[in-house]
Length: 153
Ligand code: DGP
Image (cartoon, rainbow, N blue to C red; front, side, top):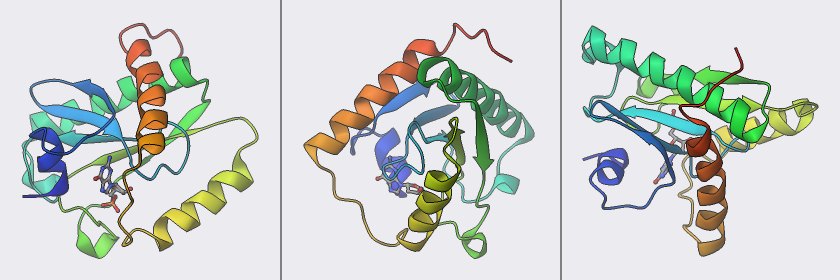
């Protein structure tokens, strides 16, 4: 069972932004930028090639929904989409997930620093704190609120 299975099963907390019968989206516990979201299929397989084509296509639809909601709800300008598709591609959780990482005006230096920090500390478990969860929940609420009412792009 992966850590994402436990989140999907409700055994671990997460700050959710979207869910349907096929997938779920929640904030990364260690965000590279504000609103960094993971879109995760409920089907627990490590790599994209093990999903059926309809699920892969659906994930991309949800990814674009989340990106648009980040732009609308958080004021981001664009987003990185990242898939570490297998252990040898630096995947740390063996359950398919697409990172949707928002970018903001003037955030180049901050984002590069955060990306380096994120990658070099992936193996260190993030401590769940009340303050960290409260901040993630605040951000998730803004994205959730914007999903379904998208005007940009
Ligand atoms: P990757 O390297 O592509 O496998 O990224 C896995 C991401 O999952 C990484 O950015 C940190 C995040 N992550 C790991 N454990 C948890 C967790 O328990 N909760 C949440 N929300 N994210 C997690």
